[in-house]
Length: 191
Image (cartoon, rainbow, N blue to C red; front, side, top):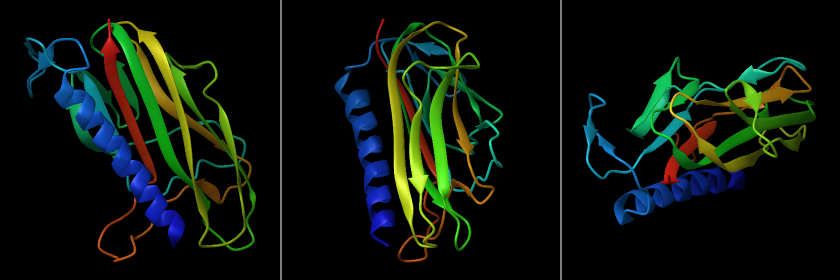
C-alpha cells in the first residue's frame, strides 16, 4: 500500500513543478489557445497519463499509451502515444511509470526509455527488477533535456521479460480513483 501513496506523491510533485514553471514564466515561447492558434508569450507544455494496466508481452518493445491529456499548450498528441513538438526549443521530458506484475509468482524486469523520432533518446534507458509479490510495484522514472525541432516526435517505450510484467494501475487506497500507470510531462525551458 505504501508504494501507491509514494506513486501518487511523485505524480502530484510532477504536476506541481509543471504548474510552477507555467505560472512563473520560466518557459519561453508563444501561447496557444484551445484551437492551437498562437497567442503571444506563453508556456509550451504537456502532461499526459494513463489509468490502464499495460502488459506489452515478452521481449517486445512497445510504445506506452497515454489516453488522458491532463494539460496541453503548444504541443500536439497523436493516437494517445506520440507527442509532436510544434515549436523549436530546449525541452525537459520526464516519464514516470508504475512497474509491477499482474500475477502471483511472477518476477523479471522492465526497461523504460524515451524515443525521439522513433529512436531511443541517449541515456534514457532504465531497468527495474519486478518482484513476485502481488501487491508490490515500483515507480520508475526517466528524463532528458533535449533541443527539439518543430515536427519532432517524442514517445515512451517499454520492454519486459515476462508477459505478466508491465505498467500497473489499480484502485487507490480509498477505492475512489484509479492510480496512474504512467505520467508523462514535457515543457519548454528555452529556445
